[in-house]
Length: 423
Image (tube, rainbow, N blue to C red; front, side, top):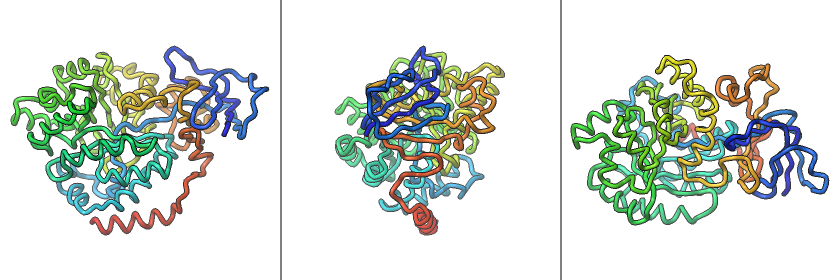
């Protein structure tokens, strides 16, 4: 299948490349041409799409989420993080089955697609469900181990790691734990053994709340980051989800180990956790990515909202209106996520890369007049501006229509029944 997208403005996200007018060609899963128009006279295309002057760019990568937690969307919205987890989420999760995870994650995947997200870093249980769904929907899914003291074991994590890194092209599996505060030292030590056995990166929730850090210091004499470093868990890289309360010593470890930090501003605000020090992290050259966190603590899966908050909260925190400029934030939401997730070939628009592409509709009132497009992506755009989402050359969403083999109304009904079963 050969596709030509023409009459477009193009943001490749390659370093040093400005937005330009041109076209993109796709053959099969990959991009074959990105450049000026007028050179296609000898090429035959199966499909040609007039972009109508809209913006073509790499898709967003959601670098931290819990897709199946759609069950908790708008369910309990007035509790702080620790109360919310222990009083609401953990009891409901204890009742969840493989089928529950599969059905509830479908809703998240549909939301990702219509919002221009083509890959997610999903920390949850029942990886067989997520692998099945990723293949059915053709959606890039990187799974992260979520072991803790009451669910999964080092043996099950190892089994999943070996299985889901070779099952199909749309799935991958990374070693990880839920968090220090839910995971005993013996399990952490066994996870460190797996990290060294397979020479793999390690990921987890880290320093999301002040209480988490204080409790860890009281218990081990170290911050969560310092504890993981002392155990060798970061010897082969990896990263942190949240990283709201990181010390200077923590940040030095991130820089030295070439780790990533995935910020989740909407969730951290809603749970009253805090504001991450993004500007300081940027100054140190640490890779930053953006995640939505789960739909139970956000309650949406909207990277436009996350980009807006990432930038504007830094302006407030530093009292500097020039802090965290939009170009850097768009990079976090695209290329930064690719690095954090360990993906390849879907970071920029260039020949040979996967055709994971979105089209931004500029012909809407919220985007006019067009002054600075990167600024508009962060401060003005919203999911209604997504007019096309393509994953691996396959159009999943175009001008309001989802191209997914699913009876969506029936899916919603099944999800409603599942929530009643979990409550």
